[in-house]
Length: 113
Length: 111
Image 1 (tube, rainbow over the protein chains, first blue to last red):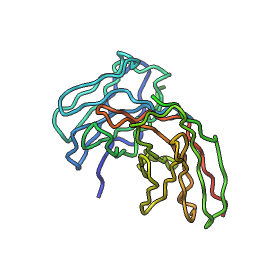
Image 2: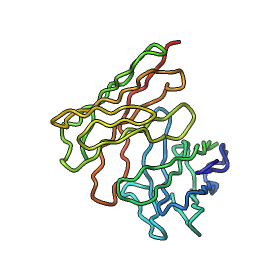
Image 3: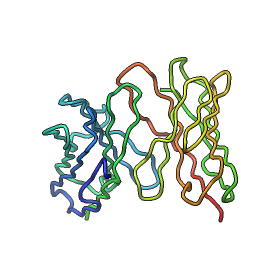
Image 4: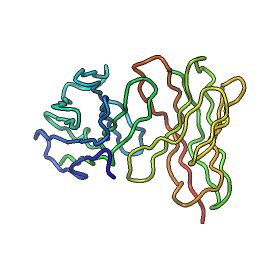
């Protein structure tokens, strides 16, 4: 039944040590999104892929990168995590960009030591 | 993007109706009004959306003011499982639109 799967659910990394979070979907949706949600805040969009086209939000730091090797998978790479990058990272999908319902995964909680 | 104003928090008794308001006075004529909710320790989930007419689905009803400057999400019979943060999000129907979450309303259900 799982539609948007995120692994791992909890990730601990060290300051400055690269980390990769993964997301997969069984919905065959064209669009995949990554959001960052810090404690007691609303989710904030980092970037999205429409098929293979990557779209970065203007205020997303260069430290955050993404890869989408195929329709089903999308990765979030944090090149040099800082303490301020500790957050919940949410992956979402939608069939298309135009006012479509987004389906979210359960999130990966990242701790930076 | 249209700005929204929602109460920071609300409480309701279990099995009673809940009315969650949202003001979106700067909404464009072509913006749909979407509602999402986020249960504790989970990702957000879609609840309902509408343009002008009131809408119903299995989860909730959406009442949209005639001037479209406000809307109300109605949970007809709240359960403990409805405790969540509810987000009201206007989204244009002209492509490449994204969800911009505001602060939302934290709904607490009292047993």
